[in-house]
Amino acid sequence: MSRVRIPGPLAGRDFRLLYTSAVVSGLGDWLDQVALLVLVTTVWHGGAGDLALVVAASMLPLLATPFLAVLVDRRPSRRVLILTDLLQAGLTLGLVVAPGVYWAAGLVLVRSALGSVGGLAGQIQLRVSVPPDGVQAATVLLQTAMQSVKILGPALGGLLVAFMSPRAVFAANACTFLVGVIAARALRTTSSPSPNADLHYFKELGEGFQHVFGSRLLRSLLFVMCSLMFVVFLYDSMAALIVPALGMGTSYIGYMVSAVGLGGVMGSLLMGRFAARLRPFATMAGSVLAIGCIIVAIGLAISHGIRIDSAVWLCVIFLLGIASAGILVTFPSVVHSETPVELTGRVWALMNSVPAVLNVLAPMLAAALVVWIGLGSLLLLAGAALLLTAVVVAVRLGGVPPTAPPSGADDGAGPAEGPASGPAPLNSGAPHRETSGPYGKPAGSSTEEITMADKIDKLAQAGFSLNDANDAQQAVLKSLTEDEIDVLLSVKSRVEAAGSDVEGHSLSDPSGGYLW
Image (cartoon, rainbow, N blue to C red; front, side, top):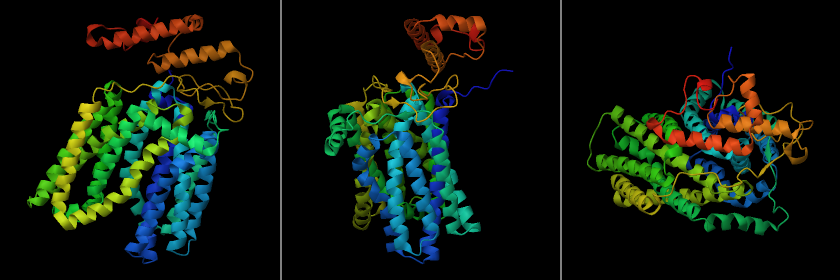
């Protein structure tokens, strides 16, 4: 009986652990968010000021992430993940016994800072857990999972709060961090500290800024994301006003969130199928264009008092979620493709924190504009800005080719900490660096065995099915040189590029195609 094969990045053991941890953690975050709002408003009877304090405490650490990123790049990512998850578990348990909103805000502030650090370490760990050409597929999988959690999380959080106290939900969320600790401890690979870790702190900090502003693509992407996030938060922060203005009850706010999440899942799945063939900025421009048209339509409906069935609006918001995937998948793909592993923490932090500053300012401007020009006009203005952004991106950057991993992108993968129980499984996307032996070899293994494993991984990641190969075919594989492997993969890519004009191999039986 043949073994069931897991396709794509999930074939790699380390990425499966990272993926599982991210999904469980994301679900816990939504449970926590619902419980915290209920605790502040219902248990402590807090007002708008108390809510604003807690929200600000969760957002402020985002502004500090570029300065914390230097410390993250100095440490193996596996250690950082373990430490931050342990501390976050303890702080979350602290919310169980927090006596008031000020204590809760303080705990949330520190926990959010640790979460930002852990998020940076997670991005670095992603780079060393999959091969360079698998980063985009891994990003799509994670984005799809996060959009799915966005649908399930709020509903489950509301259900748990209805049957449990908010403090009990915090205890449940603490357990999700412990799952992250267990997953991180099981990782076989980790990043190496930055090669410039002996530099002065501010010199290391400057390396991240120099890399971002020295790269045309990253500079452009940062500018585009700042523009997009500012405009999006102009109308997104007014969602509680937009829903009733469209003639729907307040309960539809939750339905809208779920519709966006469901659309995001669908969009991410579509991106996973076609992203490798698409030009990143052309894809982003198309997504922004679609979002801009939808926002303009909503603005016109509100301005002219047009009433449409609520189900239609839910479908429109679902399309909005699909369109957003083009941005949410393209952004990390470009960042990773343009950044060496040893700078991932600093670059990722900078690319996320600058738009976060604008996210704080946008709601205040939106509130003033609603009073000045009205809600419908605000949406028309935001939609027009998105359409203009789409045109500029398409004209200036639309010709940028599909993303490709930087040369030497996997050089930052360091040895795992501690011995592994065995070699990485066949078809694993994780680098074979399980122990701290010389040159990354597992203790007791020969160079021949390492080379063979890498050959099989390389072929498997290119789409060849190897599990059904017989002994004779495996012997042929062992005799191939690195150059012969590269030639074989080159032929495969050229055959596939020919599409329907050339049939390269049998889809049903790999032994009958050109590989064997």
